[in-house]
Image (cartoon, rainbow, N blue to C red; front, side, top):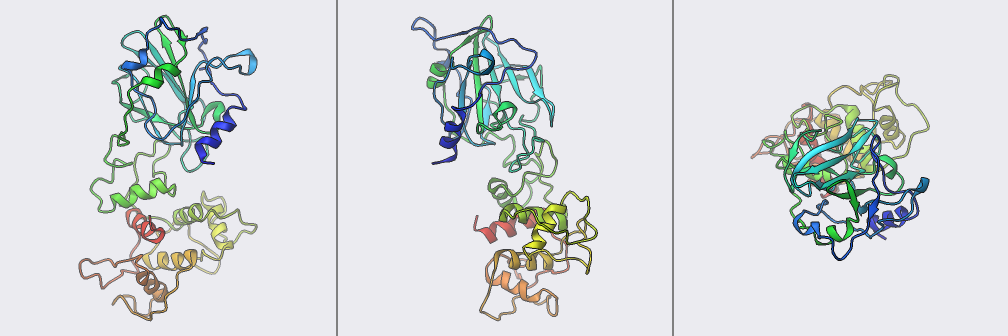
Length: 372
């Protein structure tokens, strides 16, 4: 059973729609044969794989009835404006009242978009921001413009990620949106992000394709929460950050012991201990881990060999600058597996073991190691 179907089944058993605080939900009206099909001139609100059924009018807690259609989709699937209009009420308080909005169409209709993403995906932390850059109250948008991403904010935390979509006729008359989305114009181009990839600061990086693949794998969410529209490709990656990336990919459980003296209270403490308990992490001294210290390229080689169990039967020395390096064996194993190609193209006879690792380089290492 795939994630969307499973989420749909869960959703049908629990509370669904979220009424915007400070608004009063008007009486819902079912579509009749005489009513115009507004959807023929609007865009379908979700761009990507999705599934929905007509639950309009279904009973909800507190004596309410369901006023929308719930379009089940994975987190971070793009959500677009169905028509030209101006952003009305919006709930965009990170870590609190987030993330939902209304769009007041230029022709007098309006649409509501509820349960947008509020997590730093792949984390389910409630500290993310589900709106596209520039989306705020009073801003005018055009039909098909990216406004945000599917999530599980509000009371959708336990129902599966989806977009609760409402459609209101002039006079704030809530109508059944299902027949309208059935015939809405669907966009199949997923490239709705305003950047070439997922981040706006990696266009010039030779590692951009790998950075995008890393994001799609769920290993990284960006470097500037809560917006996370930047990757910081040229920034050095710290030993603590690498612990978080590796733990996330390996899905390691929480450690039972505290292994280092200098990471108490550090944001990556749990990740560091989890890696140490799995016999992957190693310290910078006998007692310390140095979570804030930039990770070196030779240390990356040793971490990857430990994490992914790489072995090599070939005793080949691939590089000229790692002789007698403490992790020379791991560097050669990584080269034999095609995970590293060296640091000085086109010759690539050097590894630069003592040089710190950038976040962009880290992306390429991960992509090769995982075969993404």
